[in-house]
Length: 219
Length: 204
Length: 197
Image 1: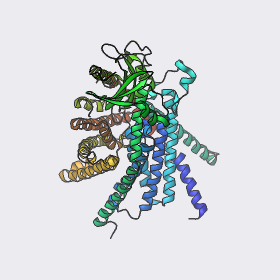
Image 2 (image 1 turned 180 degrees about the vertical axis):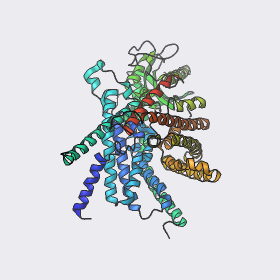
Image 3 (image 1 turned 120 degrees about the vertical axis):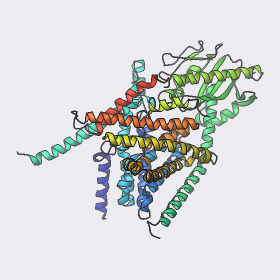
């Protein structure tokens, strides 16, 4: 592929994964375990970085191994490769960020079953060259990260009054601030994801409609 | 060897497993020491905090080695340090929580009349509920708390922290009654053990 | 040491107060996609319960006999995944031999279950909380049953929603997720029932 064409494909992948085909609000993948940690911005940041890392490198490795993998064990090999990178993340966290490793608990291991990684491995890395697959994995992870960080901001701010552990609402309002407990608990994550889906779908539909209107113009 | 033949499949999977396990073992070995030292630092800083000895992130080891010694009693190994001229004792206690084991470091003064402090070393309670026993507002309630004849009571209070150190009671975590009860049982068991050690003459 | 929880209480807690799906967010993907159809939901829920119970017990055995004695903690994830994949594979073959009818109903779901986060997630919880054998058994059956209950409930609700006027942006996954949120809230109401938090 010529350099210009490559660049074009790269940008296309970026736009798709960040907006038009975002893993969470369009593909509705990866709604799993990572939602559990979104009541805390620091944990969310680490988890989503971990997912991005694992997706990018798994896609890279699997794409590179494409010609070697026998069909019967395709899924198993995918899971093995993904587990490998997730375990690396776990080891690194335990060694260099032990407090975060403790508060994330089993959810680091659950990155393995995060549908996004399998989804990109099956849907993209199988039929695309290694570097592009890496980029696809990375941008999918970033699209994922954006949405979850947004949800985490709302949840941590309203549930604990802080951002990244730094007290903000509690400092500004003191005792007048009553933490909104449902934001700490499970249901709020669901509602917020639904809000994000609603907002983005509505925006995308409107954009599509206004693009078609001038073409359909005079009737 | 054909890609889809049985022999190749088995060989390939085997090689992939060996390759990955090898690298993971390497990664694990090379970080083993770090993980062990993290654990040691966590335990030591918990002991220092529970006893009320100030330290910074870089001076944990030096402060610990300078200030803390260990003594043995029939109830286990106790940490001893001199704080404000008087001897303070601490010990590690573990007990069942709601979901898993809660491990704490509890510190008392020599006559076992006041708790000097409490630190949570590990717990697996529900995040945002029982897990809040690890939050500062909960733990500081135990600092300088007077020990009553029944020990310490964990009661349903405002959930914001009981500021009275003389009433021998602390606020439970709102919405986490089981974990709070487990903490009460654990702390009182610790106090009993300290009293036993005192009767043996270990606490001077 | 194992926590002092009665297995029967743990069983009910895993279904109601700490539902693996509604409280722990595990197993969402197939939950959302399959709950469109009540019949498939029943089948998948059943399959998940069976697989969850068997893999839980098998993983506990592997944990106690292999991982712990040999200090292979850091390889837990890979070992558990292999156990899950192997059991699902064996189950598929056994069901196919024993009852082709059952295979027709259940078989398609089995590969889906291998990557269901609920299975691996529950196993990891079991490992962290250090359950003994009976607690593991209760937790396995309970978690599976809880998942099954949740998907049946959601499928029934979705049948009604399909004919309700929902705005375009919310149709499909949007309103489904909001429904799940309400279900999660409702289940929190169970927390007084068992005197667990």
